[in-house]
Image 1 (tube, rainbow, N blue to C red):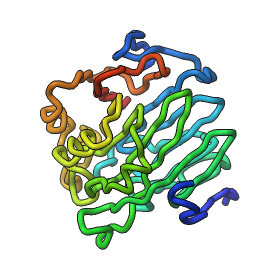
Image 2 (image 1 turned 135 degrees about the horizontal axis):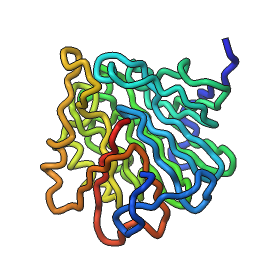
Image 3 (image 1 turned 120 degrees about the vertical axis):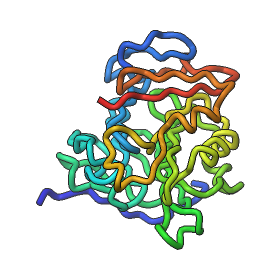
Image 4 (image 1 turned 90 degrees about the horizontal axis):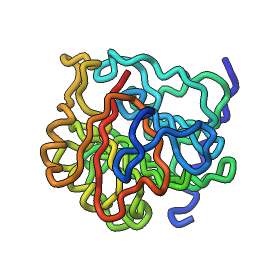
Length: 258
């Protein structure tokens, strides 16, 4: 078995498409090594690869079963893996090739000059009593601030809001079920955090084994977001640089799994 740099620091301190058109609300194609942008690749469910600043960050690799049954295993090399929990749909670190660093607990970390903050939130609507805690991850890559909420399920508290700030890009679960926001809860969290770009995660797709998946489709969330600019892209990746970010609105981009 390959040796892993599995880092479980605990809570150190709570204070411490390709092909998209380059406009303010439709983001540009850039080179993987471009330090002035971040490339975001959707790998299914809550799993994404972020590339920028010479760093590849993989979030929430999964095992293909239930709601992820039809997705390919995210067999992608990365410098760093961020894990929100060790539930089956987001903590499959053994599936990741190579020898990345792996962060699994809340706290402050730094890799290649990029600071990462893990923020603890409940993974259910019962204060974590049923499914334990979820780790939301916040960092700045390519000049934009990213907040990946993982499997957040509870309303954002004042303390959590202070730690999360106002992200440029928010990745948020919207499909409901017992372990994550339903569409109405997700919309409330978006209203609380007021990000500039929202990328929905963890919703029902054709990849699911519907008999073993309690999620709803992304359209139920989009129906609640009327008034926001919404685009369903036909690609699974986009690249965003600071100048692409809208100045006075929140836009929603739905990436297509492929």
